[in-house]
Length: 243
Image (cartoon, rainbow, N blue to C red; front, top):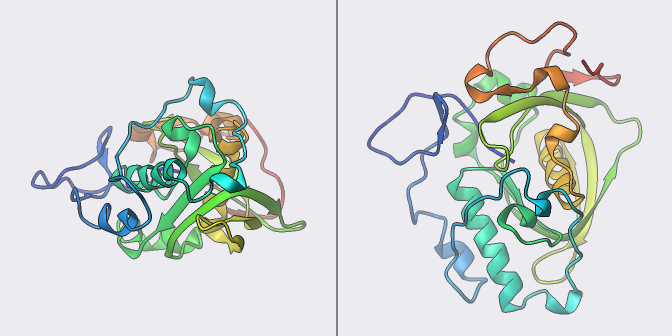
């Protein structure tokens, strides 16, 4: 899932360019290599993110065999995913996005990333920082009766575009950690949204498969008014009307 916030360009630092807006600067080698190298057998590699249209993004991913967890291959995939996510920068990534048709997701949100978004937006999205999560073979359960939320979503595999997507406010996810031990996560707000977005990738679904159609727009038009009939961003009780 792509991180995005409009901001002023500083030409002294490298940026991931998105139309007329810029994502937060990421200094190469800082906090994106050494911490995750401790887990792997090879230096992490920032890979090119697979773009929509590639079959790997539109077909269900395969479960990782328990006996393969901790292997050099799986560890390298995880390390490459984390490095690629942080370099983008993004707040989540699924293995198919780097061309690996496996059920692995990584996600992370930091105070630094959050500082580049307007405070009122952070509050409305119920966004809180959390440490790196690596989940293998995740199983997501939506909470019955949970409120919904409609917000703009982006994806590193659909570069340069955004759309409104309705998501559950609360979810539960079970799976395996990179050490092979069971993990269970109960999430709400923005973290729950990221989990739903990344688990969708493992089912072969992109956010455009669930978006409010007429809200789809280029990033440069993100702040333009919504078309008539589109729901206003925010928390809601009922399903949104698709237009």
